[in-house]
Length: 156
Image (cartoon, rainbow, N blue to C red):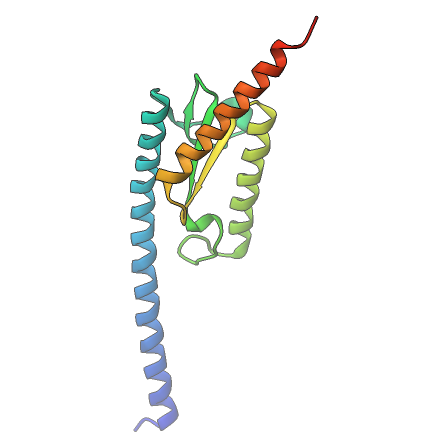
C-alpha cells in the first residue's frame, strides 16, 4: 500500500507533467505565430518601401548571421524578434548559455549593420508592427533627408 507521501509525490509529478505539456503547447503556438508575424512584418515593410526584399539574407560580412529581410535599394534590414530573444525556455534552449548566444548574435548583427551603413529595424514580439514599421521607416527617411541636405552644403 502506498503511503500518503508516495501518493502526494505521484500527484505532484502528474501535475508537473501536465503543466509542462501545457507550456510546450503554448510555446509551439508562439513559434507558429512568430512565423506568421514575420511574414506580416515583411509584407508591411514591402508595401511601404515598394520593393521586393531579399528574404533570409546572409551576406558574407555578417559572418554567417542572417537578417529576416533586406531591402537593398534603401539599405534597410528587418528583424522580427520573438520572445525567445529575451526569455529562457527549455523548449527553445537547453540552458541559459543558448539564450546568451542569441542575445550576443543579435547585438553583433546590430553592430555590423551600423558599421555597414544598413538601417536595422527590429520589431519585437510585444510591439505592433503596423505602428512600429511605418514609424521607423519615417525616421530613417527623415534622417537620410537631413544628412543629404547637410552634405549638399559642404564646400569642397
